[in-house]
Length: 96
Image 1 (cartoon, helix red, strand yellow):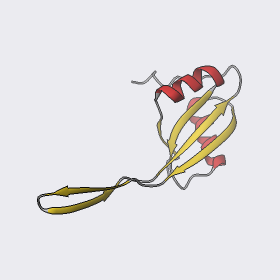
Image 2: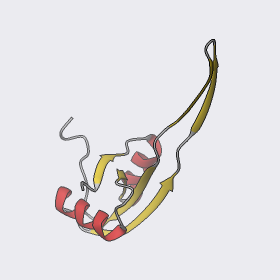
Image 3: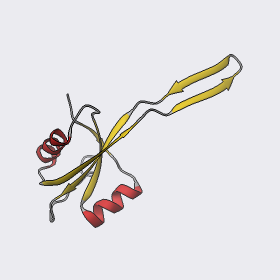
């Protein structure tokens, strides 16, 4: 099971990383805070102080088309906001 799926790169998370040393990741929904902490520390070589998680349910959508009503939904995701120690940084743009 890979714990980290991808980093979150939005204006809000980028501003939070510059001000408060907090970084956002989309993680495996079955991962707990200790597994997320170990994964971030081993992947990026930083010291993690705090991990906060958020579970997002699927978004359900209905479309009305010529062939009838189409129902669909997006996948459920889990986000983690990771606070690293003072002086540590994560360079998310190095391997683009």
